[in-house]
Amino acid sequence: MCFFPPQDTGVGKSSIVWRFVEDSFDPNINPTIGGSAAAIIVYDITKEESFQTLKNWVKELRQHGPPNIVVAIAGNKCDIADAREVLEKDAKDYADSIHAIFVETSAKNAININELFLEIIMLQPFDYDPNEKSKHKFMVQSLMAPDNVTDMEGVWKEAKPEELMDSKLRCVFELPSENEKTHDVDQNKITSTSASKSESSSLFKSASSTLDDSEVKKILEECKRLQAEVQRLRDENKQIKDLGLANHNQELGLANHNPDLGLGQIEGRALAHRKTEIKVEKEKAHQLWNPGPKPEIKVEKEKAHQLWNPGPKPEIKVEKEKAHQLWNPGPKPEIKVEKEKAHQLWNPGPKPEIKVEKEKAHQLWNPGPKPEIKVEKEKAHQLWNPGPKPEIKVEKEKAHQLWNPALPV
Ligand SMILES: Nc1nc2c(ncn2[C@@H]2O[C@H](COP(=O)(O)OP(=O)(O)OP(=O)(O)O)[C@@H](O)[C@H]2O)c(=O)[nH]1
Image 1 (spheres, rainbow, N blue to C red):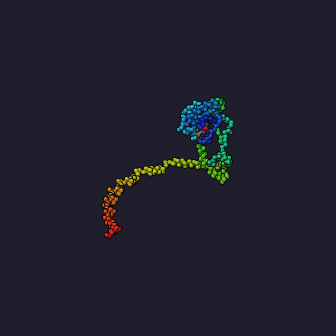
Image 2 (cartoon, rainbow, N blue to C red):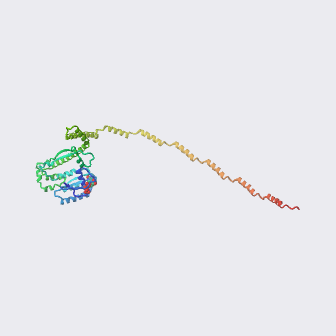
Image 3 (cartoon, rainbow, N blue to C red):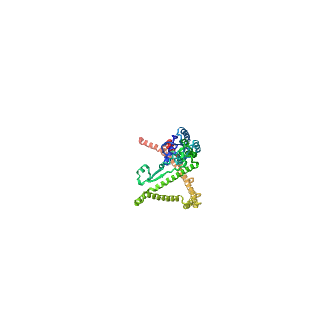
């Protein structure tokens, strides 16, 4: 139905489609291109350059694109508005000037994606054939999917017939009686269906000339309401699914015991049962999150407050003082005495004894003129220099006499 021209890369084209089709966001998405009556031109609000490229694209499209194409401009990544480089007003003014739809979107946070496609759908030429009523009847089959399913196709293939829940869906299009005129509208008139949101009412008139502003507004509001309803039902469905499989099996067990109950009846009962459970769960959850004035918590808070702000903490002060005294016990007199003793021990004054000892030692090693030795020396001298050795002379003479005894005369 619509396509993205090959505009700037990385602006989020694929992510927008993915968000719209699958209602999810894949940060590692691959490029996608569709085809036909509307063009969505996406720029990245955090990249001015992508906005300029977009303008070139619009020119191209106007010159070479299909004549009745609806142009929609999406300013994507509005979830990171902190990094914004393109002002929303500038983009809106530009979109108005070229009669294009304009919305800021976030594929990541699912902002305005449905609105973007809805506006495009609203501006599509609509061929209504009242004779083809069966076209708008559908058979909807649903099935409780087991948890953590990755292969949905496989689940459908392997589903047993008794697990399938069938319901009929009929879409009723209520159009004003003058609507027939729509089919007579010249296609060229529909060409002008490229329009901004603000102009959508007037353009819609060209497709359906009887609808006025308030009616279009009403339809848009109704669409939004229905979307919200769909979302609500989706959430509810998810809750039912979460709760459901076990209960479903349980109820099927019941069917074995009560063969009179049809599958539809059992499922109806199971559904009612699940709904009651969900209601009860919801109420419990509500009570848990809105448990009233939380008196206990208040009391606990006060206790906690007292514990953490227990007033002037007198004991601690006393303890502190004690501790202070312990660590600053005044002039530490004992230590001083000890110090003095120690000082005396290590500096015991002039060390008189040692001096005496020293003197003694000095005396020992320098015992003065060593008088005795002198005497001894003298004695020795006398011993070794015994003077003129008179005796020896005498002795010599004696010896001489002994050896040279005088010859008797
Ligand atoms: N924050 C943020 N990031 C987004 C958003 N949409 C897409 N991205 C990221 O932008 C990058 C490009 O996204 P795509 O969807 O591949 O962009 P594309 O325009 O299809 O890119 P091409 O295929 O290269 O043309 C990816 O990293 C996405 O995760 C968004 O709304 N918000």
